[in-house]
Length: 468
Image (cartoon, rainbow, N blue to C red; front, top):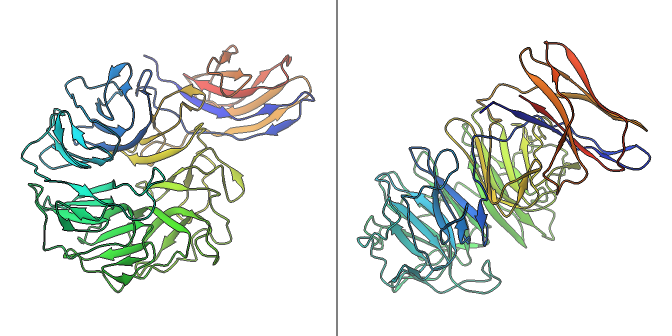
């Protein structure tokens, strides 16, 4: 297989030949990650990385690349289905987490694994079979406020495994195996309630959890109270479950905090959604100081994302991958995904085109970027539910496309070529069309070359450059 890189120009030409949208793209899909037809019958909602590089995917899909899999599956490093992993989940799996021994914790909206009753939480062996030694009893029940399905049904949103292998479970519930626990519970390794983690918990659902290097735990969601004390959408909890009163974040009313990611200096970036009435958290993504106060040096003067930020991940170079529903950031058009510089400004060299919402992003140890969600196309390529990018902190900077121009009868773009590489201009009439027409390739020689499409015979075209 030859190594190819796609540089996409999102350039739409109207009948008069004037450019409507122009943007250069230097990121590239990882073409070695071949998912075939991908997820069917639903979407991929979360991912968990095994130490061997395999990926546990979960959601509400019924098959993956034609192989029947109910709501959870495992992919090999190259994106193919791992047929050694066989599971049977009765309903939606929202989240998965990997234990040190390779066993897999799952949580979501299911009530059974195969023919065995498991209410919202279960543990699978490394081959996907149910682990009967993880005894959850009656599991998680009850609900607080409005859950993801628009009702008050109980639901697991997040799972985190501590270094001592105790298990944190969060979501929309009020009871664990007969004991009151609201939105957050900690279990021992056998599934028994850990009573040393102080309750009763939250007054509304939890959306995400993150264990810091010092053992403290960041909780985010829709709540306004933790253990009967006021905490607005975010709280930092000590390992014993008692809130850290030195951390005081505030996000206002009608707001949900969906995600957080830690930075090397102890600060964190936080994303979510707001329609609040008190003019705070309007950017959908912010940076907090170690005490929870907004860092005003992040994206100063910017307007941020225009819609829900579902997931954030920090690269080794400090840049931030942001995914969700946004179609713009600081007034610049994006397609559900963007990369921010460390100061919160938009990184213009990374402009992927994802055709629908993204729920989760992860950065692999090799720096490659994984995304999953409800999309069916990425950069004009048909991809259902999951995709991987090679562009990251560990990837050398890619060439920038220069001076894209649309004239009455031709389109042209220039780029700095590399000796030994070939470059071909490609086009389609619609971004829903995945059959790109390729023009004759031009060999690189280390100099700037201009690629041209002339004459123009269509009233609307989108262009990209293929390097191989």
